[in-house]
Length: 638
Image (cartoon, rainbow, N blue to C red; front, side):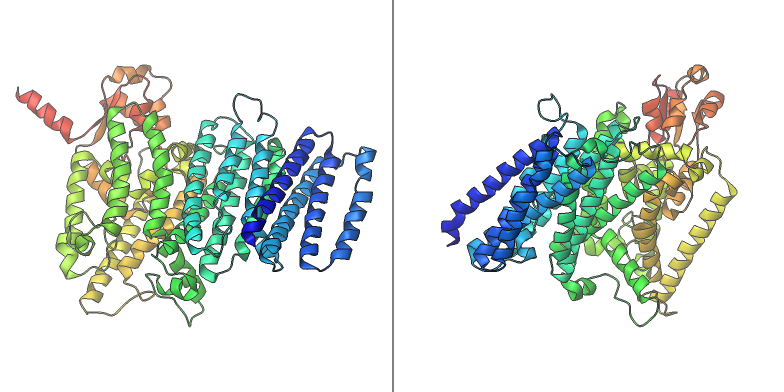
């Protein structure tokens, strides 16, 4: 029966789409607003009538409602009334969504012979694809859209949301294969959309634009949709996702009818609160996406029992702190999962690729390429997918963030694994500077050095906390932070060792203390600091001394060969722009004075990102390390 009805279903959906295209055309003209709303209302009532007839209930009341609307709803059209524009857009969006939902229920009941409920009316292709096509038309057919050589970036951003919605997993909710495919496809579409939004904002970073407001609203849409998918995988119901999707569709239609009135024109480099909100929402969206992909891939179990049972730290119970502890466990479990890192790496990696394309310095291009490669090989493949995973704990340089990263401190890993890692990393920092970690192998540079996030270094100068970390001066509070952090980390390592050797029995949340400290630092606190860039400045891990592993390598690097040098100090004397200091993501604003006085610059906080080299308009700065020292030694010997 369904096959025989298919041509009729297609025809009905096509007629609905064509009529709504016409209504959108009327509304965009702003001369027939009342008629557009009237058409949308009629389509809703007619589909509702078809649904009532098929299911043989409430037919007479719906007929009366249709007749009443046909009679009295046309009066504002005949009177030529033009209600408020915002009210008109809102009414049209509601009626358009209601009409598509009613059509979904009508066609679903027509094909199955069973009355469709609200969920069934939303979870079918007739609702989804007709609605998406109408939303696309509403975006395209807008001022500056059709007939122009280029589509405004605000419309392009809206289309990226449509691309993600085109793979909605609720279209065939009873087909597990399709749901799995749609989950991954929508995630890929959201990742691509997020990258595109970052780049739009980055290109417009010197202007106050409407697109900034739209991008924040799109990020809210992505976030609520990912929350809906996560709740489905945990609780087995599409209701939260359907509610989120309906709200997103309503917003989309409302905004696309007049994108130029989406909100206040602003700029992400000038508005701290906006930037913080955007970064926070991006992280929340990424967190839920990481959770969804980790469950879909089988890394975490599905359903409440399966998810709880697959977490690396056991579920807590029986104390008043259990809810907070469980929330913390869930957060760090997802941020420490491979699919969260893969998803985040895909987003940040593309921004780093764009940074690579902007770079003109060969050495810096090599460093960026190594940084991207190191993230996927060193931070993802080796610890999660390589065949040597069982032996990683015994291999030097594999304790990526120092103590705790690969588990408890035991006698079997103390010398080869942990101390070996510190020795190898120290040698590399002496030879090449702490950039071997802080600008290449750590996960942080991938996140900090893409185009959009690199531009946030402006907050080093404009935020109150960022201004306190400017220059290479090491302040007393920095020394205190480094000392306390190091003592805490190494104290935890001692307790871990004593615990593993049986001298004491001490765990926190049933987990080794050293491993828990590592997870707290790099799977939780680091992301708090990262999204707080608008208030704390960029590279706070370097500037504030709370990253014990980075601080160790910076201290060793300060004793080694690495420094910045200039080819001609006189050039710096005559320089008026001081682009090198403006470009530094760590905020080392005093490098020019050192160049003039010494011809070089050496600082504890310099991690060799190389933006100063790129920014120098005279190509006067270069990074000096062991290679140059050896070369100079041979030149002297000659």
